[in-house]
Amino acid sequence: MTEANDEKRSMALERLYNEISTAGVASNLVKRGDEGNDFDILVCKHSELGGDEPVMGQYFFPDFDGPDEVCYFTAMLTVKTKLTPDERSLLIPRAEEVNEQLVCGHFAVYPEIGLVYKITVPLSEELDDDDFYDQINITAAHAMTLTGSFRGMFE
Image (cartoon, rainbow, N blue to C red; front, side, top):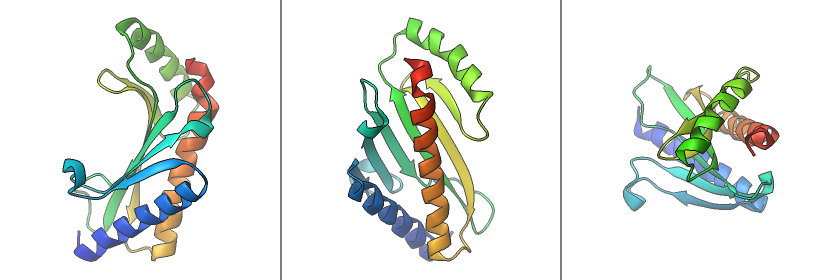
């Protein structure tokens, strides 16, 4: 990875932040080094997805060593937090049922986080800036749509 590629990822995430915040979603772009982060991360409070508890979204490029000129983009949306052990044991089979219907990404129950929808996609850093941004925007929109569509199955 090069410094230019770091800048490309940072600019794409900033562009996503601008689009999401313009749409009225409460969001915060935390830059690498701020709050101890190893990478830039966009944090959003998706109250527009309904439910009693807002969905918390995190969008970032994880620090993962992959092939040259390939990076990875992750969208992780937390649907439910502070789950009791009984709630976790009820949600795991539901997540498995829902995951059978999904074409990509998955729901998972993490004891320390809660119920999460997560998708990570590989991206070529050789794409021009607009195409690179389009790919992360599609991934983020996909994650939001699926989370909103399947959220009711976990209520």
